[in-house]
Structures are given as structure tokens and as C-alpha cells.
Length: 136
Image 1 (cartoon, helix red, strand yellow):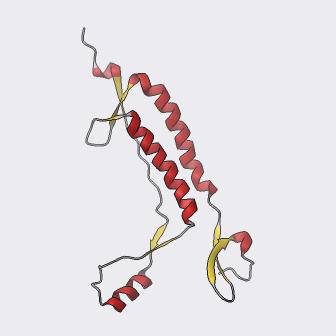
Image 2 (tube, rainbow, N blue to C red):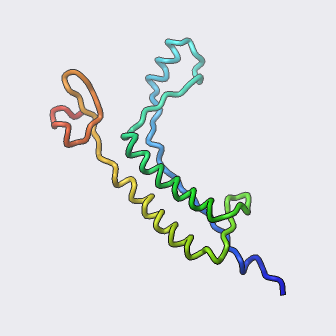
Image 3 (cartoon, rainbow, N blue to C red):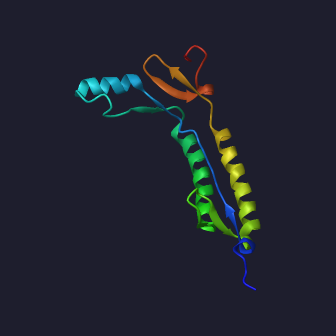
């Protein structure tokens, strides 16, 4: 009796969405276009809303989950579902559960930051580094 694919493998899908922490800076975009006589849609200038180090922790956690998913599965359907051998299902489920926890935990490691101004410069700093008078 031939073995059925449904007895040997399952379909696995992974969907991760994450906030980019970037915001279009319309004022800078307009200034650059005006200064360089560029077309209105020649470029977009974004500002990073949180510290790069914190964002990288979130991106790394999500990337690790994707890498593991792709390593354990094979392409199967056009909608993104991938084939996972049934023999690997328990190991896959346990590791994905651990990685999922890491992806959810990563944003909590971000420090709350505030925009501070000192007499000579403006900068991002942790709230502990900003006095109440310096915060905007």
C-alpha cells in the first residue's frame, strides 16, 4: 500500500509582522526637494523613532524565527504554506513556541526614550537622563 503524503507531512505557515519604527519626515523631504530642484517624488526621508539597537533586537528575533521556519520546511504552495515532515513536527512546534516568546519579549527590552534638549544640543536619551525641565 503506497504511503499518503498527508501521513508523512503537514503544511506549516509562519506570519510575522513588525513595526518599522520609521516615520516620513515631510519637512526634510520638501526641503531636500526644493534645495536640489528635484521632482516631488524623487525621494523620501524617514526618521527612526526609537534607538537603532532596540529595533535590531526585534528584527533579529523575527529573523531567527523566519530562518528556522525556512530551514525546517520545504516550499509547497503559492500562498506561503510550506511542507513540514511529520517526524519533525514536535521539534518544530517546540522551537517555534520558544522563538515566538522571544519575538514577543524583544520589544519589552526597549528603553523608553524621550526627546531632550540641553542649552547646546538636542538629543534622544533615556528618561532617567532627562530632567523634567529638559523634556519636550
